Length: 265
Image 1 (cartoon, one colour):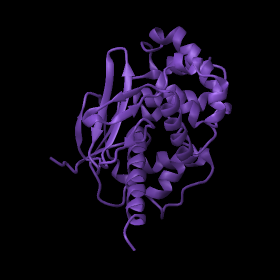
Image 2 (image 1 turned 90 degrees about the vertical axis):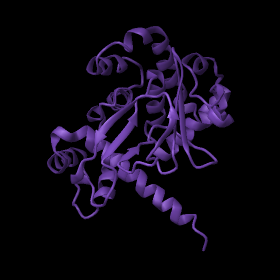
Image 3 (image 1 turned 90 degrees about the horizontal axis):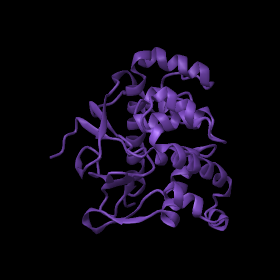
Image 4 (image 1 turned 60 degrees about the vertical axis):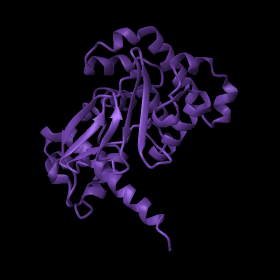
C-alpha cells in the first residue's frame, strides 16, 4: 500500500530504473547479496533485504507538500562507496552515474534479481585490478584507472579493519590512498554511514539543490558563505536531515521535468 508520508532516495549510483518503471539496486557483501526494489513514485519499498536510515524532512527547506520521512539506503559495501566517489571526482553527477553504470556493465558481475531482471554489480576490487588498461580506455575511464586501482589495493589489504572503525577515523584512513583527498573521503564516509553532515555540503551539487528547493532565497555562490547561510536557514543541528531533504526535492523536481518531457504533444 502506498504511504505518501515516506520517500526513498535513489541518489546512490547503484539505483537503476527498470523497464517496469520501478527502481532497483544491489550490492555484494560478505553475507551475500543485499538488494531493494522501490515503487515508481519511490513512496513504497516493494521488497528487499537492505537496511535504511530514516530522516525527518526539514520543513524550512521545502515550500510545497512532500513526504514527512525520507529513507536512504544503508550502503553495505565500503568499496562500492569509495569507487563511486572516485568516479564522481571532478565531473558532473549525471556523467559520473553514467560512468558508474558503464563500468558495472563492462566489468561487474551479472546477477539475476527478482522478476528475472539482470543487474550488473559494481566491479569488485580484485576485478578492478585485473581489468586491462585497454578496457579503461574503451570506457573513457583512463583518468579514473589509477585512483580506482590504488583504492582497490588499499581495500583488499585493510577492509576488515576499516569496516570496524569510527567515521572520523575512517576519514583519516581513506586519505592515505593516493589520489583520494578530503572531498572524496568525506563523500565516501557520508555514503557508507549515512551521517550526511560529514558530506562536503558546500559543494556545487548541494548549492544547486538549495536553489531548487528555495528559488526565491538569496543563496550565496561562494562555498563558505553558502555553508553559513544553510546553517542559518536549516539549523546547524539539522544538517543530515537537511541534506536528505534537498536530495529529495531535487529528485522530485527532476522526475516531474522528465514526465513533462515525455508527455505526448
